[in-house]
Amino acid sequence: MALPIIVKWGGQEYSVTTLSEDDTVLDLKQFLKTLTGVLPERQKLLGLKVKGKPAENDVKLGALKLKPNTKIMMMGTREESLEDVLGPPPDNDDVVNDFDIEDEVVEVENREENLLKISRRVKEYKVEILNPPREGKKLLVLDVDYTLFDHRSCAETGVELMRPYLHEFLTSAYEDYDIVIWSATNMKWIEAKMKELGVSTNANYKITFMLDSAAMITVHTPRRGLIDVKPLGVIWGKFSEFYSKKNTIMFDDIGRNFLMNPQNGLKVSLKEARTVITSYPGSYSRYLRSMNFLLLC
Image (tube, rainbow, N blue to C red; front, side):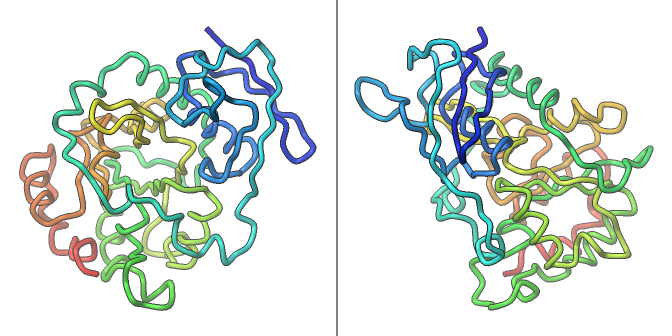
């Protein structure tokens, strides 16, 4: 059941009409990010309470007992300065700490509520195509933080933070793969980073499109509660004539980002890379040498 909400921020009112009582406060924040550009972690929603206390991110909207078209106020600011955009992402233990997703997959991958969220992203999320998909090419989806760009390095400039052999790797991959960048942050930050690294302007390969945090969904897991994941179903739904689970692979340093598509995820580590390369449909062995850029700090 749809639950229309009106959010006031920056002297304007934003109408939220696509969420339901089964969606969470975090889902609302993610949607507001697409409307306002304010990251979820920077949002403070006034008036959302449960038993007199501010509602946590995992609280379902239905539990808030909101009337249709209830007006709430949001406080928060966009990342406007270049310094904010080019700096490391907000501190978040989830960036470093990971957990084994095996026991979570059965609980999450095929749950109807998660599939509905993916369908909604397919309909609502706007993809800016930078270069048209190429007929007959496979799809390589790449994370940014700690995958292409190493914030934990002692280097001082963006170029020095870049993984070794990044451009050689992308040039080699581009022969057989369309390349997509997907980061769990905002698009402004992604565009700035890709420009700084020379990825978006390299003459030897082209980026098909880029996705930000608004393309992700939240899922509930038995052990960790509510988490964000990167469902490849969003891409497959929007570009079904080009990409599917049979020709897509995603590199990420966080294993739980693969929770909705565990067979298509390759975590950045040599041991897991070897396992996936030998078992995944198609030949990836030709890229094993250039994968050094993922493994070196």
